[in-house]
Length: 247
Image (cartoon, rainbow, N blue to C red; front, side, top):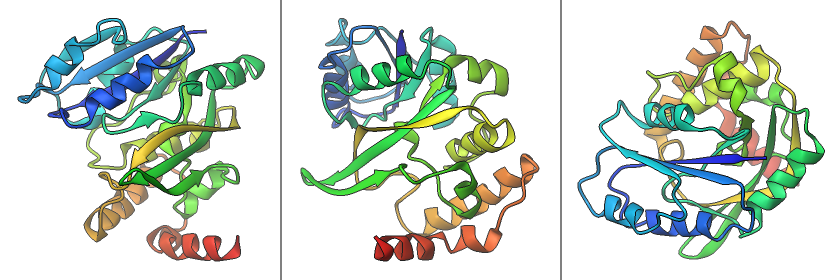
């Protein structure tokens, strides 16, 4: 089973090398690693060129944003399953993809698997974001399984479409709504911690992004003709706090 990993980047010289090293350190052998660069002006390309044994394919050209770059990587991929590894993230451990591949081989009829991620700050883990209790219906109240923990069958992108352009930060949410709710793909929770992420990012960096993603999530439901709770999505942070207190 081949797993394609896609990293998109732009001027990522401060973080990309650690990302590539985490792929190179994987114990699983059947990996296709694709890097899509947005025509970086710093040392990013020189870093990519340092690792020809780890990086299977790469391109560097202007794009129309993060999700356009992801789509380019998907179109280049030849693996059975596809995972996304952001340019400032790393795999949680060297055995990550070996564990994911093992899970997918046992459950060889599923379209996707979800897992967990950890978030770190200054070298210290500050949060474990788990999808253990997540189900697709929770999308309707603002809860999404962590995107970097999901591995999709490559055939899904041909069958149901790529990441939709025109969203600033919620195209991943829209794709998950489309796949899990509209087309009801088959999936299972793996229980595997896949990714270590730095705190922050486009979808978790302040009230401005909170309002943008709230608006875009509503748009995603409407475009897919799926009923949801605008009130619960808007105040999803409240449900998250109550969920934490109930643990």
